[in-house]
Length: 177
Ligand code: NI
Image 1 (cartoon, rainbow, N blue to C red):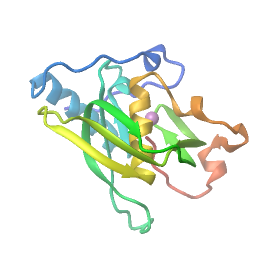
Image 2: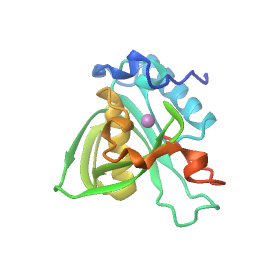
Image 3: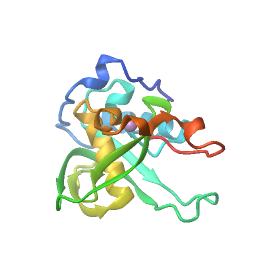
């Protein structure tokens, strides 16, 4: 398939409320997912939402694998999530650094719910229903925000903790979402 251009912050298409997917297991949906996977891998991202490649649909992918350089990093299973619904399980918030392929070269400290349940469909229409916490919960919330036109800088509370990745974390090779 193809590596697609990722829209960058400032592009009005990133601000739309994306449309629900109505049909599953279609060639069009498989092609979209192939392009999303190719694009995410080419850019070494942790996740990607369809609106980031200009496709106005409620489709996200994500996945974080073990990395020899960061053996203690939490992993997240490769997931296709369509028409997602996120339900926080309590009021607990957790702040951590995030990056985004649509905001290249930057990092910000973002509060997210620590514990969430997420539901949705995979590309075949099979139900996904998971209860997760920590980094996995953060990645899901970040990606699903893209479906409602929200980029992580819009959630930053303390702008003294927003900056360029190479200045904030010299020498580190971090993934974006
Ligand atoms: Ni992002």
